[in-house]
Length: 94
Image 1: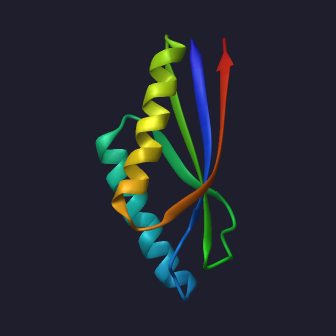
Image 2: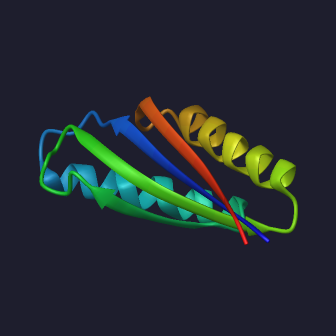
Image 3: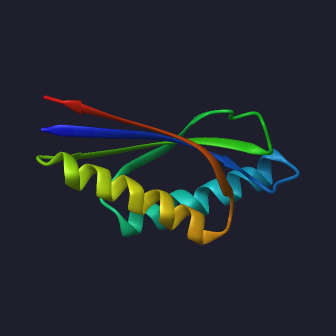
């Protein structure tokens, strides 16, 4: 079993926390509906211009985990709601 975890940092064009949360809800909802992943905001909750999302995916094959996480990152970028500027990926083998 392989667990893939991605931490994705995004620049959010929001002037307030309310606007930021609206954008985050859209990103997470659309991403969840397209991919079988877990996703949530994991840091920078009180900073209106930055969001850090944690994404997790589990599979029997490492290659599939890497592909899904790359597709998730590309999908979020293509939504054009926020701009990714940092990414960290880690695979754990069990």
